[in-house]
Length: 337
Image (cartoon, rainbow, N blue to C red; front, side):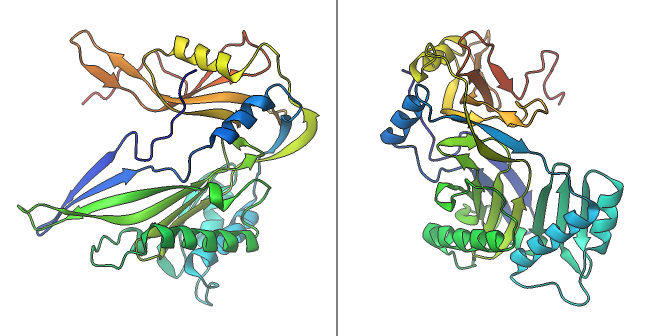
């Protein structure tokens, strides 16, 4: 059986170098994991393929009016700031922009450093630019335990504000990463520190993850909120058993993945409800998903590493073609630079 693994550090590290007259900064975004699946969890998922434990899920794609988006946006801003908007603060500009386009960006009126982004499908993101851009290594670091406790506090506030809708969001399942930075006078070795903690929380129905509707949160090392993202499709379990085939097992799908992607680096695997698979009908079937990083050996012997991708296999039809997301573009030529 192909081994399952989730890397505690990033599979891919993004470096952004920013130079000033006095300092050189290197920002590193690493995606760590909150916790790995236990052997008992894996066994339960495997057994679920052969029992009635798996059900279909109904998906709801929210379509917000400008007033609904502004109402939810105001509650989201209040959670970010820890207070209600003042008399001179409003979302008038944001509401106006949402009414004219499916996606919109606007600063909160009276708070130029607080910005809201709305994307079609009910996605809302709020950012405090002053906190997000703070790279002071002298700020006291709350540490991983403090960041996790702070995340749970913010999550509770989001629930109280009605911004987390639908079952299956457990803050214990959140994945945590860090934005790392290094600062030093030019010509000296940079001292690395944690600039920001990032949290990602997927919806789960039982042991099955939903691919959309993720909650994201950015915490400055001080504990101040830099960013919150909520919204998107929501899934709810139905009483209808999922379709499955006795010929499909986790072991057989592991072998199929290894056979079809022999040069891939496996990142994680597990059952998922794939948003977009409902084809507009509002009903999802669980699929076995494999996240992987493609490795291609070139003629000169060098190995080229691609972007992370996911292939989904049906647990009902053993001969069904795997669905790759994002879809590869055979005409892609890469970065022209």
